Length: 225
Figure 1 (cartoon, rainbow, N blue to C red):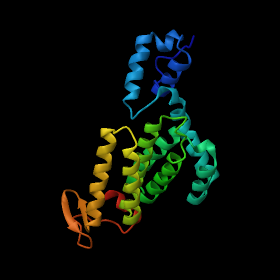
Figure 2: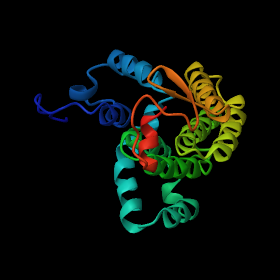
Figure 3: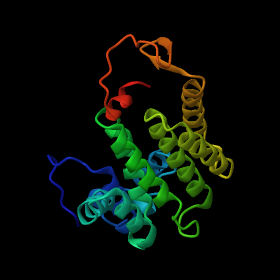
């Protein structure tokens, strides 16, 4: 029987893994109804499958290993492409989360992380993961990458990524959340293509003075949606 300090923070991913690996553990699972309710809510989190819960727990360590052992982006891309260890659902989701989190500090880093996420997503084994869920994750990765490219004014690269996002989304689960994400990113990209930017509720043509002062630094693009 597992003993748990009531003051320790509860990690829902570890709990999910425990429920599936140790269903007889009454301290953690309590009863089958608790397990059923937890499974229901986990499945609402973007196709979360409790069977793969350990991958979410492993992902931060995998990313740390990749960043430490490969010092440059090109080396990291090659490592992801060649090493099956990194063909990992949890790592892909973690890279996407880190890409979006880094927008406030560096659009360049955000783009690099999203490109790594795309590389991981495209190498996931649909035979191991759910096929339609894999397509959804690939669409999400391409969509996040498109937005990261847009923020760096890499419009052509963003357009290619959007096309890939839409292609994979058509093969997925028809997720409303994913469709909304793609539509929002596409609208933002269209503003860029039309020679306009959105800044704090006001539109201005590219080259025209913005309502706020923006440093001439690529990472500052992350503050202009």
